[in-house]
Length: 341
Image (cartoon, rainbow, N blue to C red; front, side):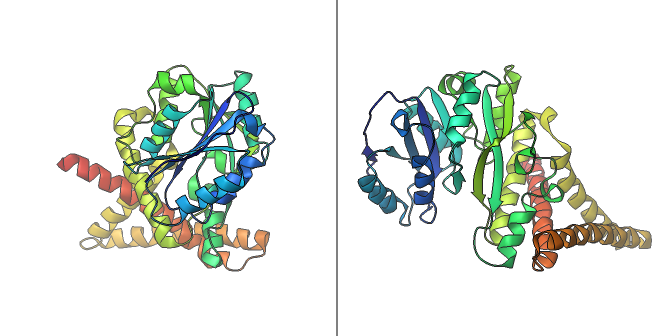
């Protein structure tokens, strides 16, 4: 595919917004509109979309958008490796701006997103800054609504502060992230051997080089959650699988929220095996599952009343369990594969 490009520069490019993209025909123009509506002067920014050779209408919609919105500098480059870390590396290498703001094609930054990111970086409060996700359903229906709530609930995702906090501070990770291009080159870019958790690994290298990661809740971005349980399971299986690969090099970075799912899944597997031979194992297994179910149902019941949405009572336990079991199973499978390799 030929690269698409429009260059309409009024001033010097200061910020490069980079977007990994693949088959995002439903959201890509929404994202471009959100970038065009930023309070940061669009004459001083460019948009670089690293497209993994989309097979839907994504490229056509980007081309149409370029023709109708020539005030925004947009450059589409091919990502033949079709992975997110490769997309980020290609986009940053093509970037002309001093500052890099990474976004995803299924996200919508609020109007002050870029301005707040760049202001924070200029104060040198940290080497990388980011904000909070406002997670919304990826489609219509009670299960999609349940997934969106579960993906921002501490029971579902632990202490990942960028999904629910309202307090600024130093953290170990932020969604997407904004940083100077100079830092990206110095750290060595994204590790293209990791097909997930590549951003967390990048932030780990920043911290190991005495850098800081800053989260500001005023920096907000709407994120479209997965639309059904199948997509959610694939997402969290991939997270768990590649988290172990990342931890092989950085075992000291593991957090309790990351350790609990594989420990829980492994415990259930052992109890299930032992229950064939020992009766007490059956009781422990039943009690553990009953306690888990009570916690999930209690969490969902509270959300039902808070959101006035009865569908959450069944949907949230399904979504949270899907996240926990998929993440834990993917992590354990990654360990087993590494042992055999």
